[in-house]
Image (cartoon, rainbow, N blue to C red; front, side, top):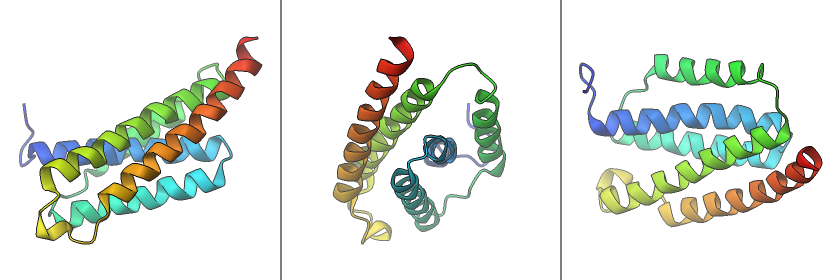
Length: 142
Protein backbone atom coordinates (compact mmCIF):
# COMPACT_ATOMS: atom_id res chain seq x y z
CA UNK A 1 0.00 0.00 0.00
CA UNK A 2 1.32 3.44 -0.90
CA UNK A 3 1.91 6.04 1.75
CA UNK A 4 0.28 9.44 1.59
CA UNK A 5 1.47 11.21 -1.54
CA UNK A 6 3.82 8.45 -2.60
CA UNK A 7 3.74 7.22 -6.15
CA UNK A 8 5.31 3.97 -7.30
CA UNK A 9 8.00 6.07 -9.02
CA UNK A 10 8.75 7.95 -5.80
CA UNK A 11 9.01 4.75 -3.78
CA UNK A 12 11.19 3.10 -6.40
CA UNK A 13 13.62 6.00 -6.76
CA UNK A 14 13.81 6.64 -3.02
CA UNK A 15 14.50 2.97 -2.35
CA UNK A 16 17.40 3.14 -4.80
CA UNK A 17 18.63 6.39 -3.29
CA UNK A 18 18.59 4.78 0.15
CA UNK A 19 20.52 1.82 -1.25
CA UNK A 20 23.08 4.15 -2.78
CA UNK A 21 23.54 5.79 0.62
CA UNK A 22 24.48 2.45 2.16
CA UNK A 23 26.51 1.48 -0.91
CA UNK A 24 28.62 4.60 -0.70
CA UNK A 25 29.46 3.80 2.91
CA UNK A 26 30.36 0.22 1.97
CA UNK A 27 32.67 1.38 -0.83
CA UNK A 28 34.41 3.72 1.57
CA UNK A 29 34.78 0.87 4.05
CA UNK A 30 36.39 -1.28 1.35
CA UNK A 31 38.93 1.56 0.92
CA UNK A 32 38.28 1.81 -2.81
CA UNK A 33 38.39 5.55 -3.41
CA UNK A 34 37.75 5.39 -7.16
CA UNK A 35 34.73 3.13 -6.67
CA UNK A 36 33.39 5.36 -3.89
CA UNK A 37 33.80 8.38 -6.18
CA UNK A 38 31.89 6.67 -8.97
CA UNK A 39 29.11 5.59 -6.62
CA UNK A 40 28.86 9.13 -5.31
CA UNK A 41 28.61 10.43 -8.90
CA UNK A 42 25.91 7.84 -9.67
CA UNK A 43 24.07 8.90 -6.52
CA UNK A 44 24.21 12.52 -7.67
CA UNK A 45 22.85 11.45 -11.06
CA UNK A 46 19.99 9.63 -9.36
CA UNK A 47 19.18 12.73 -7.32
CA UNK A 48 19.25 14.76 -10.56
CA UNK A 49 16.79 12.28 -12.13
CA UNK A 50 14.56 12.65 -9.08
CA UNK A 51 14.66 16.46 -9.32
CA UNK A 52 13.85 16.36 -13.03
CA UNK A 53 10.91 14.03 -12.39
CA UNK A 54 9.69 16.10 -9.41
CA UNK A 55 10.28 13.28 -6.93
CA UNK A 56 11.04 14.44 -3.39
CA UNK A 57 13.72 12.78 -1.32
CA UNK A 58 12.45 10.69 1.57
CA UNK A 59 14.82 11.80 4.32
CA UNK A 60 13.51 9.22 6.79
CA UNK A 61 14.22 6.39 4.36
CA UNK A 62 17.74 7.77 3.78
CA UNK A 63 18.38 7.98 7.53
CA UNK A 64 17.19 4.41 8.02
CA UNK A 65 19.50 3.15 5.26
CA UNK A 66 22.44 5.04 6.71
CA UNK A 67 21.71 3.69 10.19
CA UNK A 68 21.25 0.14 8.91
CA UNK A 69 24.66 0.23 7.25
CA UNK A 70 26.22 1.47 10.50
CA UNK A 71 24.45 -1.28 12.46
CA UNK A 72 25.83 -3.92 10.11
CA UNK A 73 29.32 -2.89 11.15
CA UNK A 74 28.57 -4.45 14.54
CA UNK A 75 28.01 -7.84 12.94
CA UNK A 76 31.02 -10.13 12.88
CA UNK A 77 32.23 -10.56 9.37
CA UNK A 78 34.80 -9.08 7.18
CA UNK A 79 35.66 -7.80 3.80
CA UNK A 80 33.75 -10.62 2.12
CA UNK A 81 30.41 -9.57 3.62
CA UNK A 82 31.02 -5.95 2.64
CA UNK A 83 32.01 -6.86 -0.91
CA UNK A 84 28.97 -9.08 -1.35
CA UNK A 85 26.58 -6.46 -0.01
CA UNK A 86 28.11 -3.83 -2.28
CA UNK A 87 27.95 -6.21 -5.22
CA UNK A 88 24.23 -6.71 -4.67
CA UNK A 89 23.74 -2.96 -4.42
CA UNK A 90 25.56 -2.30 -7.67
CA UNK A 91 23.50 -5.00 -9.36
CA UNK A 92 20.41 -3.16 -8.12
CA UNK A 93 21.74 0.09 -9.53
CA UNK A 94 22.33 -1.60 -12.87
CA UNK A 95 18.73 -2.74 -13.10
CA UNK A 96 17.58 0.73 -12.01
CA UNK A 97 19.34 2.34 -14.97
CA UNK A 98 17.98 -0.34 -17.33
CA UNK A 99 14.44 0.15 -16.02
CA UNK A 100 14.64 3.93 -16.32
CA UNK A 101 16.04 3.72 -19.84
CA UNK A 102 13.23 1.36 -20.79
CA UNK A 103 10.35 3.20 -19.11
CA UNK A 104 11.48 6.82 -19.33
CA UNK A 105 14.16 6.89 -22.02
CA UNK A 106 12.12 9.22 -24.22
CA UNK A 107 10.99 11.55 -21.40
CA UNK A 108 12.22 15.03 -22.40
CA UNK A 109 12.91 15.85 -18.74
CA UNK A 110 15.69 13.24 -18.78
CA UNK A 111 17.37 14.60 -21.90
CA UNK A 112 21.13 14.47 -21.53
CA UNK A 113 21.19 11.54 -19.10
CA UNK A 114 23.25 8.83 -20.75
CA UNK A 115 21.66 5.65 -19.44
CA UNK A 116 23.87 3.50 -21.67
CA UNK A 117 26.99 4.97 -20.05
CA UNK A 118 25.49 4.53 -16.57
CA UNK A 119 24.69 0.90 -17.37
CA UNK A 120 28.21 0.28 -18.67
CA UNK A 121 29.73 1.87 -15.58
CA UNK A 122 27.57 -0.24 -13.25
CA UNK A 123 28.72 -3.37 -15.09
CA UNK A 124 32.34 -2.28 -14.75
CA UNK A 125 31.85 -1.59 -11.03
CA UNK A 126 30.26 -5.00 -10.59
CA UNK A 127 33.26 -6.70 -12.24
CA UNK A 128 35.75 -4.81 -10.06
CA UNK A 129 33.80 -5.66 -6.90
CA UNK A 130 33.69 -9.32 -7.96
CA UNK A 131 37.49 -9.41 -8.12
CA UNK A 132 37.65 -7.96 -4.60
CA UNK A 133 34.97 -10.37 -3.39
CA UNK A 134 36.93 -13.37 -4.66
CA UNK A 135 40.15 -12.11 -3.03
CA UNK A 136 38.28 -11.71 0.25
CA UNK A 137 36.78 -15.21 -0.14
CA UNK A 138 40.26 -16.71 -0.53
CA UNK A 139 41.46 -14.95 2.61
CA UNK A 140 38.44 -15.45 4.82
CA UNK A 141 37.21 -18.87 3.77
CA UNK A 142 40.47 -20.73 3.27
